[in-house]
Amino acid sequence: MGQVLDAIHAFFDGIAAVEFTALGIAVVVHLLKTMCTSRAWRNSIDAAYRDQDVPWRPIYAAYLSGVGVNALVPARAGDAVRLYLAHRAVPGATYTTLASTLLVLSIFDSTMALAIFAYALTLGVLPGLGSLDALRGFDFGFFLSNPELSLVLLIVLVIVGIVGVAWLRLHVAEFKLHVRQGLAVLEDKTEYLRRVALWQAADWTLRFVAIWFFLDAFGIPQTLKNVLLVQVTQSLATLVPISPGGIGTEQAFIVFVFEGAVSTGRLLSFSVGMKLTLIATNIVLGFTALFLTLGHTDWRSIARKRAAAEP
Image (cartoon, rainbow, N blue to C red; front, side, top):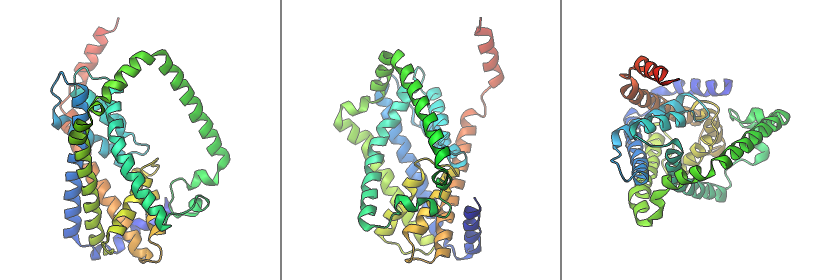
């Protein structure tokens, strides 16, 4: 945490040199990106529930709310918020089916992330496994430095996974039915490419455009190579983020990847400045969407109705 705070301090020291026009454009492009992603998710849900009209706006609000919570709370807690709000927006939907629609999105995202990661491997710029615990600000450094504790946590996760699999076996028929329903858009390749993959392609294009303008805002050379390398660090940081938004891991990888090409001070200013800008934007958008969705809900009335329904 101290290393991350040092990076934040470096960002504020160099804030006068930030090109705010480019920074503003990057934020606008990021907003357009969220619209594309939510469109792809909405279309995936719509294919799963063909007998009803799935509105885009509440799904977009659910997506933004999840992004906002993920920006503030680690371990991707926002995904649960996202599913809860989508469940409210689609009457009769099940959480298993909605979660499966997110799996549909992961197909394209994983393919793109792996392709960019493979490109980074060919450049030889990523750190080896043996040097991860030495990266400044790396979120997982504590676990790599404490293998005994890490082993215990791994065993606990395995036990939880075994219990989960056992529970699913007792409900396997219903579970498979809901999963298959969530993956319905994949049954027609043309529909999947037109209604989901096309929107996700726009999403990834806008990701690259946003990074391009972030590089410009912080005085980092704007090249396709640098854009792809920054995207690699973002993808790695979101695998299992411990710090909010994975800011520690992203800062650590950016400094390593660009070592020697750009001064460390400028890299710290760029990595933390970009991340803080995105976190702030996601929090504002997410919690605004959350308030507009739930702010006028009469929770006391709902609680009374549930209490009255209980035997």
